[in-house]
Amino acid sequence: MTILVTGGAGYIGSHTCLALLEQGYDVVAVDNFCNSSPESLRRVEELTGKKVPLYELDVRDEAALKAVFARHDISCVIHFAGLKAVGESVQLPLNYYENNLLSTMTLLRVMDGAGVKNIIFSSSATVYSTENTMPLTETGRLGCSNPYGWTKFMCEEIITDWVKAKADWSAVLLRYFNPVGAHPSGRMGEAPNGIPNNLMPFITQTACGVRKELVIFGDDYPTPDGTCVRDYIHVMDLAEGHVAAIEYAAKHKGTEVFNLGTGTGYSVLDMVKAFEEVNHLSLPHRIGPRRAGDIAQCYANPSKSRELLHWTAKRTLKDMCADAWHWQQQNPRGYDA
Ligand code: NAD
Ligand code: UDP
Image (cartoon, rainbow, N blue to C red; front, side):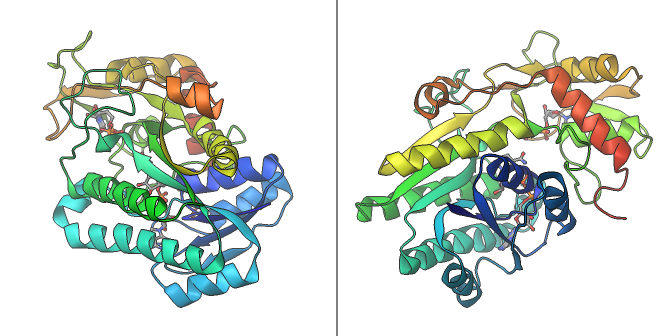
């Protein structure tokens, strides 16, 4: 069975390609490399000993995408391709709406033409309104606070409406919490461009001296230690969640939405302490002001995924910290030589 992975060279996409190959699926990847490098998939091939046909194209390029579907016998698509930086989406909203919405609509049209009826979509916990109580269930109120979040919300709507109109389609919308960590080999991991926005790559870059210190954004939140709480999930657990979603989509019609999180929240200070302990180092850090738009707590209720996808996150916070550091040490400049 062949799975087409859009955005396959990206952080989550590349780890998912590896998980799919390990489970015996064939994988075809497409990516325009606007936020990645083909080296990630070369490493997937190195680790698995299997080939991943990779096409450099923009998912909005209908003709180019059609040619890929014509060349391979694709059963299901996992759609990771998209822009994902919250702050940038506030500065460049049209880029986000154009890229994320048009790529999704083009993909659905091309899939339809090719008779491919199963799609797994990368959504985000950011689609949940800040008014919900924790932990978040899939029936929680929706509402976003930035253009990136709205693109995820709108893509969920577009896919849901499309699948409603097509009786024999299946869509699985996966709302990720906070993916962190790397493959335990240290050969694959997260390689952000420029100064990282996210906590874990900022921690690893500080630990190896690329950044001077970690600034913790606020310690006056209504949480046990005053710093924000998030549901960090190991990227390999997340990748395996996609394998479970493919199996689910093969057996069920219609659209279903699932949280992919661990169900456990850790504070920023918990993360710093765990990273220091696990990796036997000291991380320069200080408390700074709050970051605009941050919420105090965000963590999942993962029961629905456990019951219907038969998936649960297995890796520990220790694994996340050890694997992220292993990757950073082996690849101080990401995938660049
Ligand atoms: P990433 O940037 O590493 O991967 C996305 C990939 O898509 C990149 O390789 C990029 O080059 C490619 N891409 C973007 N637009 C494209 C287009 N029009 N055509 C072809 N390729 C295109 O990001 P990631 O962290 O791996 O995230 C994957 C998906 O998961 C994204 O849709 C993201 O919004 C979503 N997501 C990520 C997180 C997170 O914290 N990393 C959380 C929730 C949801
Ligand atoms: N954070 C921080 N310093 C940083 C980056 C992040 O204190 O340099 C905090 C941030 O305020 C949030 C948590 O770490 O509470 C996770 O941030 P990230 O951007 O990784 O994820 P998100 O806010 O999207 O959940």
